[in-house]
Length: 399
Image (cartoon, rainbow, N blue to C red; front, top):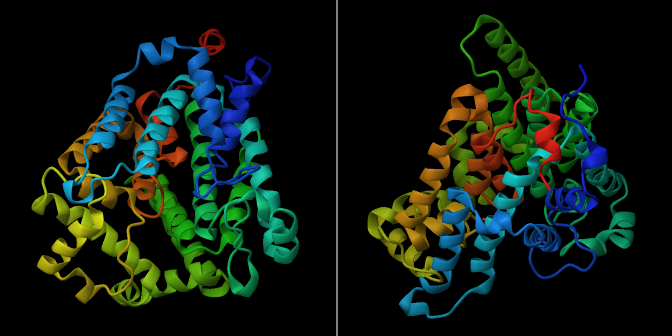
């Protein structure tokens, strides 16, 4: 079936660049000392400033993100009176990304997505099969080049194998969305195939776990044909885990199937994430309105002294979770914002969009910054989905 909303000749080059760099957010020609690089934010900012009507007539989600970003500059822990520019800038980045996607997501199609996936696939492939060559030739395009030497998975243009693994899942999600919701089937199978290979070569527990969760919810409908498909997928997953070398990701999955509690308490990487999530859940009970920017470490000490989290889950206690960080520092302010974004997604969730929402929440809860673009792309398509019958005239009218 031919796509009903394909008009690459009408898509401005700068919009294509915004999608390319936001879907490859760890790449930079001159990396700065953050995992996410600001190229996509600069391009999005230029586009939105050139179309100021989008900034003067904000949707309610964009407006709330803007207000939250302003609050983050002044809502500071009095015991740590310091403005953390990077953290507040992350929320501004979320505002820019969501606003851009909500206005320009119409321009994304399978062909552009294929180009983005291919640009990421090639360095991952090189990193996987020749890590020394990758680090020497392409390693300067990421903040920290962690090559696939020593049994690690490939990271490509990402700071960690887990990041590119998660991006691979995001590409699969996006291609699936374009096929199901927009009827765009061109490049669909090659996009899915290349993305699966990216997840495989990352050998990351994060990527593989997110992929399994997304696949599960794709078939999560109580119908006979779906149950049969789901059982076939589960059998295939079992065979792959048992007989295919998936590196660290495969070891984690085997541990989860064998003894999930043991893997959460013995694998330091997983326990680190579990500690963060538990802290984010418990914090509002002790600090309903949060402790302010910069107060996470102090709050964790108090929460841990009450609930003894590290007695059960030994490991690192530093924060790597956007959910935990903002839940602790802003309390019900942040939780209320996220509740609004989730409830606004309800209409699309009832139409089968729950699988997309789950992936967005997984990104928020684990190792990704609040500025991670895929989160805000997913929310934008849940808040303003485009049907297969979306007209060319409306698409052409977005400038």
